[in-house]
Image (cartoon, rainbow, N blue to C red; front, side, top):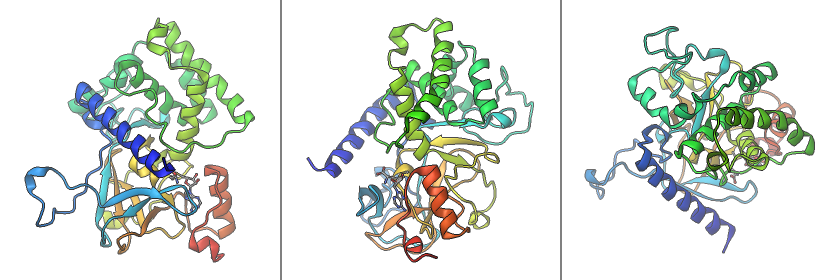
Length: 335
Ligand SMILES: C[S@@+](CC[C@H](N)C(=O)[O-])C[C@H]1O[C@@H](n2cnc3c(N)ncnc32)[C@H](O)[C@@H]1O
């Protein structure tokens, strides 16, 4: 079996399992299925549901898997939208961000409950997939560890672990994503987070039958994937036209409302002169938009960093944050 066939078949297997779980748990907001807002063509009937996005995931020549257009896409079109597999608000903004969808709220609204807030009943209900488990444990030590060390990714692992325990997500849900290569030093640094996470569940009397998956290997494997694939969420809250300067998937997180991992958006490779970008309007639901006209068969690429800096600075950001040497045309030309 070719690597591509393997990749796509594991993706459909994953999607199928996720859809089953989705229907069993009414995980409306965690669905990873992508849809496009482009109107259906004349041969499509309205009753067949939203049109599939005009993209496919396939192998690129030199950057692993990538996303390719299956038809011409016009500048400004929404290519597809995507809901997070898992998201988490920044700890510094937890009072003012919906604990589920990351929408910005006024502090101390009536919907605030037990230190976290939800923007609406639907988010409160949807959050049960992780929050019912999370509420049973004491997170002071774990959250302190993240806060004092300025770590945001372990919070995504904590939320994912709660989802797995509640049965809302399979433990291998992110396995299909590309992992970062971790040094022994990085793995050692993750140990404290793992122990604190494990202890929180143990102290809450969650037995091995519910936390069997929570090994050090699982924790580091998930973090290795989050490291490369997590998006920092900067809400725009304004018109799309005002947003063209927003940098997506940056590794600097201070101004962000939170972080999230998605399925399809994770297959988009980086380009320092991208033809596509990812934006968030009012919550963690992402939109992929074409920045210019894109031909059928062309690879769609987003920008992971602030690309306004020099070639040397971009290469160093990408190498330190994502572990790769950029092979885009702009970098190859030394621009
Ligand atoms: C978020 S993933 C993108 C999908 C990935 N290619 C895959 O197969 O799953 C980011 C990884 O893709 C590769 N990549 C993305 N953009 C690249 C680029 N411009 N040049 C070289 N490699 C790139 C790097 O290995 C990087 O760590």
